[in-house]
Image 1 (cartoon, rainbow, N blue to C red):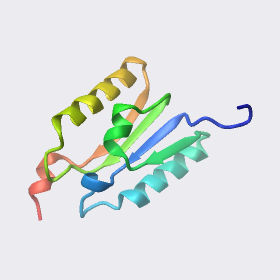
Image 2 (cartoon, helix red, strand yellow):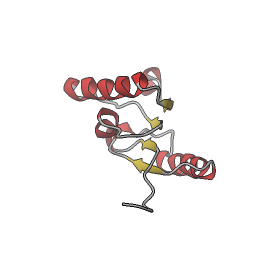
Image 3 (tube, rainbow, N blue to C red):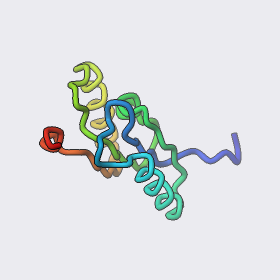
Length: 108
């Protein structure tokens, strides 16, 4: 479709098991999106973390803003996410990641 902007960036925002009590992922992801839009990017924001990492689509920039899940995630989902990230890296796609380190999950 001519005239329909195609996203070139994807912001993956912490939701579901990828939230934590220390970060307001919705607010920080919205702020990241505003900055990227100000730089001329067309983007999508999603809270479907595992699906987005497994199949991020045709993006030139991936921003991951998530927490560390308190419970282990299904191994097949993690393998799929790793594969999606590896494919983007092989294409030379830029990425920026903010994730809660696992060591933080034990702190109150």
